[in-house]
Length: 317
Image (cartoon, rainbow, N blue to C red):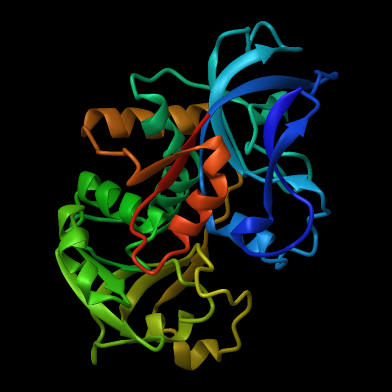
């Protein structure tokens, strides 16, 4: 048996049940990862709230995790004891995820890594930093770009600010609904902060060449309003809790503007290792803002969902 966090029915954080469940056993094409840590993600809170109809309960949540191979059906690539990470691809949604001492994961979705990061640091990386990295690649950043991060105080927003500075953009601009977080944003490389009031940026003219839209469809049209001609906006997050947008592209997009999106697809061992190499080369601070134990996963979700939340929340197993 193992300890796990099981969601039997939708609800608030108290719906997450800490209990004993059978430890999974390997099957062809799958290996067992001993979980050392995992990050908390908004999508898991959405699922807990009952906003993910495709997820059938009961389910062990957790769309990302880091740990070591405990049992394997691919000893050449995934030998026992090898450090590895996993993210997305149905983890915690189509099959049981990382909110547990062990997770059974398809071999193709396990990525062996070489890194000097601690477990807490590594646990903060997979979904958050890979999402930020992939989004910035989609934006085709240049040294002349002013980058606006809509939803900059989120975990992905903080990672994107650090990565964008490492990649050498001209200036990082961050939006927030709470200007009391301005100093915190500045510490992670946000040069200027724009207030977001009731879904409207307090800016009257285009201010950005590139925009990373993390709030999502709820604010997309307003974000496009401040995109300079010829700029690119990448829709990545759905922090606003809205999943579709109704807008007229000809009037919403600036002249020559481009709209793209990022999903956590196309993950590969090489891309993950490239990201870790970038983090190492620029000595980027990836440590989470808060850490919790597995038994306190409900409190970890509550911390991420709190009004004063900033950056990444991690559970160490």
